[in-house]
Image (cartoon, rainbow, N blue to C red; front, side, top):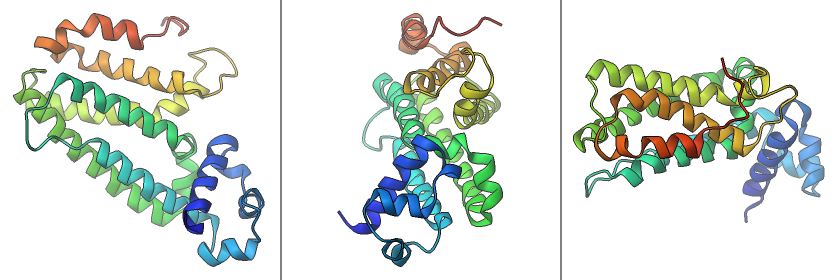
Length: 217
C-alpha cells in the first residue's frame, strides 16, 4: 500500500474513533510510526487529509447509487441501496458527526460538499425513477423530489441526531446498529408510496430495521 493511502486510512480510523478535533497530524504520524516530516511530504495539513478522505467518501457514495443499465431494477437492488449508503455513513462517520465544524473550517470542502449534495440527489432521482418504472413505488414527480430531499436530510443528519437528541437514551455512543436505524426512518418515509413486492415486504422490513429501545414520541 502506498504511504499516502496508509495515511488516509489511518487518519480515517482515528477521526472516526476520537473525533477530528481531537486528532492532530502528529497523532497521525505517531500512529503510523513515521516522522511528521514524512507525513507533511504527502499532506501539508490536516485539512488536506480531510479533503482527500471526503473525495474517497464521495466516490464510494456515488458508486453505491449506480442504476443498472442492462436490466430492470430489482427489489434486491432497492434494499441494497439502503445498506450501501448506511455502510458508507458508518465507514466515514466522522464527516457527518462533525459536519458543521468541518464545513466552517474549510471553504474548499464546503464548496465541494454542496456539489456533492447535488450529485447525490440527482443520482437518487435516477434510482427512484427506475423504481417507479419497475412499479415498486407509485409517486408523482413532486412526491419523488420531496422524498429525495427528505431522505438526504435523514441520512446526513442521522449520526448527529443519534448522539445528541436523547431519543435512544442518555450518553449514547454512535454504533453501527443505531446508525442503520436510519434505514427504518427512510422505509417509513417511503411507505405511503410503495406497491407490489415492496409493499408486501414492508411489515418484515419494519420489524427488521425497527428498534424497540427508541423512545416513543
